[in-house]
Length: 284
Image 1 (tube, rainbow, N blue to C red):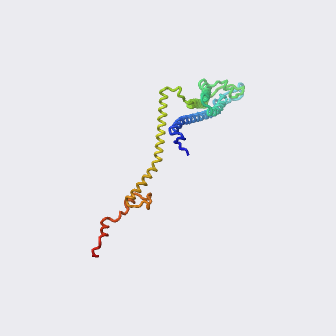
Image 2: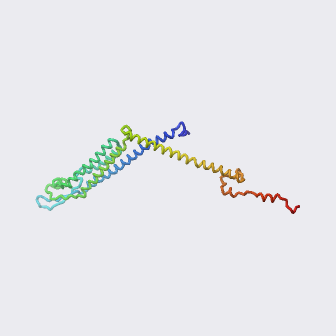
Image 3: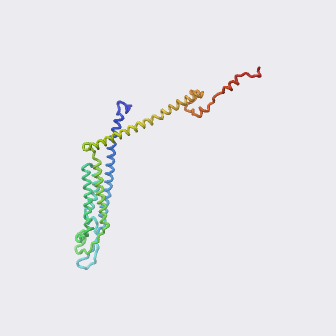
């Protein structure tokens, strides 16, 4: 097997340089994907808001017949009838999610602008309805009121109408996130960088390469240190066994500890040997 650090494999600096070059790109791609997912979530929420507000009653029309023979009637006007483009706008936002996840660059910027503009455009009828009030003629037309009735009063439900602003804010926020994703996905070039920025970028790359090389050396030293320590401990145990008068070939050095070496039998002392060698006086 070829050694990665040998002559046939890439050197440590080349490997570190490649990892350094790939890391910023991978981080940037992850940031772009995360930003796109946030924008997609906002667009989905905006679509739900516009569809839901289209199903609510925006106003109630009180009308009476011209002949006066029948009593007054009330007609409810839904948001989808007052603003017919709310439901199509919800479908457009869902389609924008798929488009935003598949394009980048200027295409993504265009989608961001269109999404924000559509959300703002949806708020104009609401602003007119809340500020100027409801037009009786238009209210009678969208309420499907029979021709023999005339409008007496239009009661606007402001809380339901104002819900459209929530969808507008969600669309604008989604457009901002899409613009950030488009800007983050563009690969920066050093052609338009100032000398100070290029120097700072070079220093950052050198420092990152140095940190990676130092961490690699630390890991290699940590992996080699236990084996060296074990060999030194085994050799020291053998020498201590020899100094204690033991035969290391008959005793497993790995089972011999410092306590065993300190408590080994030192043998007879000099006085004991002299006592055994001196002849007994009773024999004389």
